Image 1 (cartoon, rainbow, N blue to C red):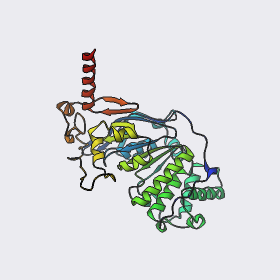
Image 2: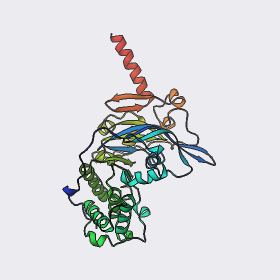
Image 3: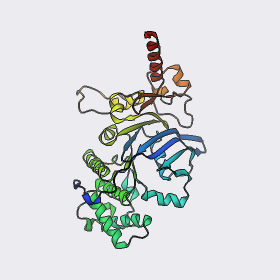
Image 4: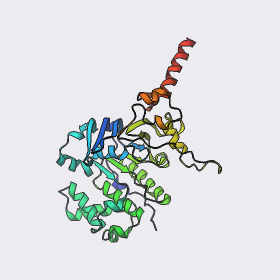
Length: 354
């Protein structure tokens, strides 16, 4: 049975939060060059993340969420390749770093939590050995004794009890929720400034999901780190994120503060995601509304808006040309021809009234 998270220790709080941009992604383009042709997995996305901010990236499977995250941390596998754009971390060009610099960058500056901890943890090494190894790989000066002490502190931090005994156990002796806590401890053991969480709660039941989310919120408040939270679960986004980027077919179709995305969505795809999400306040007879159609063939993407073939509001221009971003509010923008049309009509009305 899962143990609930402990209260986080005050002595593990890191330095005071900074202001400004921690991560800045501009026009990032990633392709996979396969025998069948070029798959444009990420097609020119841009966003930024401030210190201490939590941003959710949502979308269906295959929308490019994980690919852009692997690009940030330098784990993109062949035949994948970054073909354009820039990734800046604290003003440093991440894409210009050497292999050795990226090894140091991962873990020390940026850490990642993956979807399935059982495939990430080595089954023949104890959990304690793996935590110590992760720390000593990035901090050569730390002694084995100090590394073990830090590993035990991190296990306590993420709510694992009886740490002396747990350090000697193997991954198969932990439940799914506890393994994910170990992965979080491993990600945070070097005190990174940015944590990328790639669907960390997908393989867990809802009770354990809630515990892990609560743990991550509390850790984020204590450590002031930035978090990029990748998920297809909008309920998780509402729980933990400050702002949201909605991805579809390798493009960000809408960005904005979490309340704006939920209460005043500006793109039909975002509306579709919200309508397909179960709600506790819905009447018992209300049915979920699925998004009709199938995802885009990324080998042959449409010329215009990628969502146009599935959109019930699609116009002729939607199929022919990618729409520009339209500002809908403070930090809220959407790439949709409907919003462009609304903006044009509003200007015409304003001109008529004048």
